[in-house]
Length: 267
Image (cartoon, rainbow, N blue to C red; front, side, top):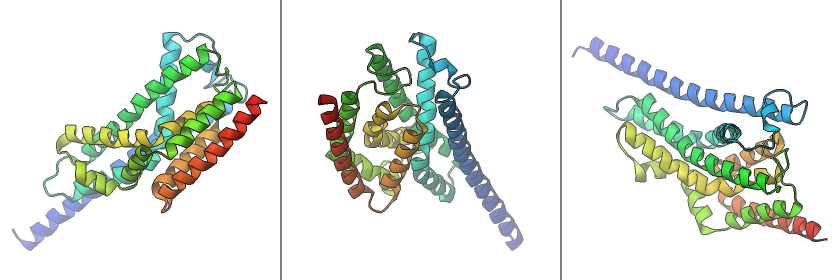
């Protein structure tokens, strides 16, 4: 092969890699942006006129249509809250595929990995929908989708606090904080392998954050303040240098708040 032909081939490969990288980044940004756009507009409407995106939420009947809409709301919420913290693993997976000789369809496989990750959180969304329905039917959750009793809020905070201190939490958090190690240990080839790998990573993240997500029932499922606070904390826990120690400090803090609320509800 002539020097010119080799240079042309290298240029084409580099252009393809840049295109794949742009496609992955665009997909991530678009998914997170659309999710947060919905959350912001729906939250503002719910705590405002309630004649827009949140109008359908104000009903006492948990019929199949309403249940599906609540489930869809949770799915969108999990995309907006959890996909940002998964971005390092997704981008690293894409980079590994792009740099691997002979790797086919790196963009499609990266999207499959992302889809598998979100599939795990879709499963959590189903469980959250069922729990919300139970809490609403037993009048433990107000029509504004927030705990109707301080003792319930205290219980949710205590569950999250205790879980923050468990070995399972630390194991899942360590895996989420080390995507390179996770991908090395669990790599699977092909498009189906990308989906399974994404589900595997997503299950670690569900194991890390499920109790924190239940705090939405304490502060308001559609409260933009609580959604933003939990999202910010999850990002810090997974990405900042002292995230592991911080998770224990957060557990101790949540426990103190839970005890305080418990004392208020008992008085």
